[in-house]
Image 1 (spheres, rainbow, N blue to C red):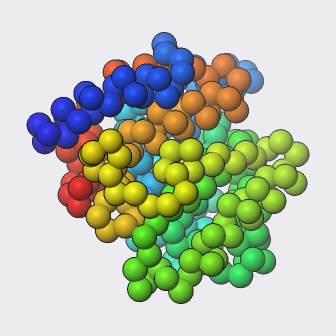
Image 2: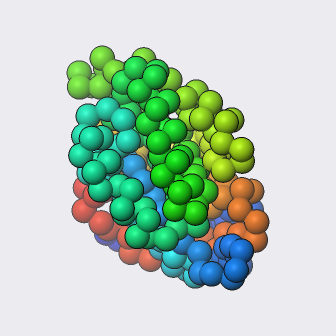
Length: 245
């Protein structure tokens, strides 16, 4: 735990630079209602949500993660079960923004992927929120993922196509700005991604959070990211989700 805490202390300077702005986070929707960000995705998103929760709390913005281990996707395996509850969960959360971390299970035909992302857009906008797609991080596929890599490679393109037809109700953030074009387990000599080839380590999750906050600031009027030192070293790195790091 001490090692992870020290790791995040070392990250503070990097995240402050990444976040570009400091201060209190403010999301100011019409009518002055309190804002809330809802985060969707699979187990990759579960890890990313840990520092995100700390960051939004530090900034005074509501946050709820609906990300799920072994699921959380909107197309592909498990998605039928997820759709039975997802619309109700989103509506009940009353979000201003829904962020979908494109899942490593989002395989299917091009038509299936497009229909699912369009359905997600309709669900989110029907709840009165904006949708932000975040492209999937590069992975090191094992035998389970290898047959589906062509489908997964198409997800970013599909998300952009759905966004283009959304009349400004959706956006896409390219997480390649965080992860690069290929899976890398370490960055700056420290664990950044899990050795399993899929998930994030605390350093990577923190870098992702700093990047996402900056991306949301460009999309959402009035949103200023909180300073990294208010959330980067608040104990979340000891979560059992990071046991593979």
